[in-house]
Length: 586
Image (cartoon, rainbow, N blue to C red; front, side):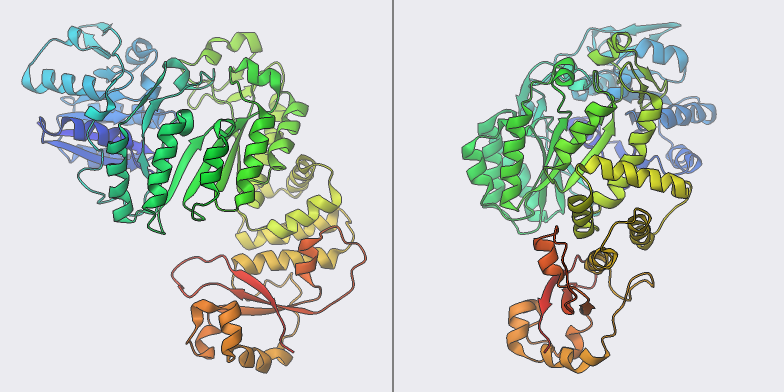
C-alpha cells in the first residue's frame, strides 16, 4: 500500500519539518511512505495530476492557514477521480473543530489532532495491518457511518529523545531551501493569539541529541538552520549550551535563526553573544506592541524597557541580525497607540521589522473573546482581522500600505543612508515619514502596478522633491550612494553622473599600487588591474558623503568632489552588497 505524505508550502524555499518527523517515526514499520512537497504557487491541476499518477492508496496532507483552502479543493478533486483514496489530514488548521470540518468536507476520512507522530503510526497500523481499534487511538477524528467520532486527547510526547532525527535520510532536495529544526516543543508563555497557548509547559530534546543533529548540519555546510522553538531561550542552560556548541563548531558559513524573548537574556548570555562570528546567529524577537494594556490583554508579560535595553546591547555588538515583530489589531491598540509601538520598535534600528496583522486562529483564547473586543475578521483562512472596537478597517488599510513600503524601503536594506538622512532631518518620528510616503504612493497610483527595484529609487527621489525639502542635491547623492552599494553601474538617468574621464588614468594607477590593494581590496592581492576593475567601481560625488553619513544634520554644506570606491566582491556568482571607501586619486 503506497502512502503519500504531502503539503503545500507557502514558498519554494520552505520545507515541512512535520512530514519528515512522521516519515522517520514510521519508516521502520512502513517502508512505502513517500514524501512529496508542493507549494501554493503551483497550479492546482499540476498537483492533482502528480498525486493521481502516483497511484497512492492513502494521501496525507499537513494543513496550515496558508494552504487549507487549496488543500480542501484538491482533496475534493482527488476523490472525484480516485474515490478509493483514503484522505488523512493533520496540522494546526485541522486540529480544532474537526467535526464541523468533516461535516462540511465529506472527502476527509481521518484527522490526526495535535502532536501527530504516535497517533499517525497507530492509524497506519490499523489501516494497513488491521491492528487495534479506531476508538482506542487517542487524538483522532474519524467517520463511523454517517457519524463523526473523536477519541480522547493524545498526551504530548514527554521523552522527545524517542523521536528520530527528521533528516536521517539526508538533505537531498533541500539544497536551496531553509532547513527547519527544533530543540524543544511548547512555550512558557500563553499569549492569547497564539496556538501555543493551548499547550502547557515546554519539553526539551536531550542536549547530546541536539548537538549530534547540529553537527550533521554544520558538516553539510547548509546555508541556514531555522529553529522553530516557540521561545528558544525559555531555558537559559539549554539554549546557552546549544549556542556555545554552535560557536565552538562554527564552519564559517551556516547561519542559525532563533525566536527568542529578549528580556530573558542575562549578562552571561550577552557576554557570550558579543564574541560570536558576525552572521552566525539571527534573532527574531516578538515585540508585538509596546502598549501595556494590549500586552496585558494578550497575556504577554514582557517589559519593553528591559527588552529595549537588551536589543540595544545586542545591536551594539554588530554581529547578530535582529528581526523585530509587530502585530496590528491587538486589543486596546488604536491607530495612535500603534503609531507609538511602531516608533518604539523602529527607533531600535533592527535589521528587519515585520509588521503583521492579527489573525484569529482556531483554538486560541482571543478568538473565543472576539465579541469582547468587537472583532471583525475574514471568515476564511488566514482569519485576518479587519477591524475591532479600537481600530477601523480604513486605518487597517492605511497600515497595510505602510507595511508594504516598510518592506520595500526599510527591510530591503537598500536605502539605509538616504532614509537616515530623510528621517533625521525632516521627521520627528519614523511613522510620520511612512505615512507621508504612503499618501504620496496612493496619490501617484503606484499601488496599482508592479515596480522594479530601480524605480523605487526614482520614486523616493520624486517624493523628496514633492515635499520641497531643502538640499535636494545632497539627498540625491546619498540615494545614488545607496544605489551603487546594491547595484552595479551604469547609473539610471535620474541620477547625476559626474564625468570621470579625467580620473581614468588615476584609477588605473591606483589599482597598480600594491599598497592600495592591500589597504582597500585585500581579496584581490596578486590580481592584475584589468581584472580588478571588473569587480569594483569608482564614482565621483559632489559632496563628502562619508562626513554627511557621520553627521546627517549638517546644513551648511559646501561642494567637495569626492571619489568613492565600491567593491562588489571577487565572486561574481553571488549577489554582492558592496563595501565602499572614500579614496584619494590625486
